[in-house]
Image (cartoon, rainbow, N blue to C red; front, side):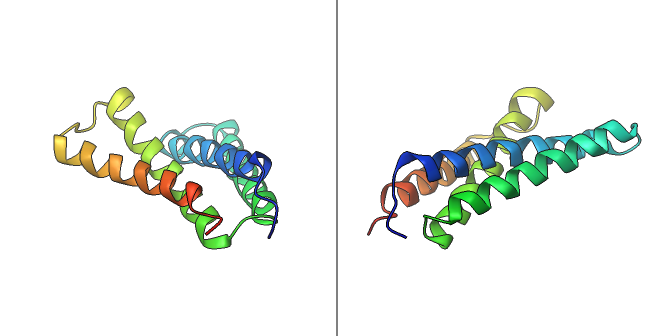
Length: 111
């Protein structure tokens, strides 16, 4: 687990973006054609593949937490922007805590 270059973290970050796409796709896949469902499956498969690749060189706990944090914060922020979900200051504060936690885990993964 000695390789801490940007490559594995970039894979985890990209995996998080595919996780966001998959989660948001779930919102639309129900009641729609099979292409929506295939797109959700493809996004989630890409997310898991990239996470697995990143885990080759990263601590599992940190990488997994960063992946889930990117997904959770990303879906929450997009929900606020696109779907008019609550932007209550407490909600924004806790989303910011998730983002801070993700950044902290990334920065301290070598410790």
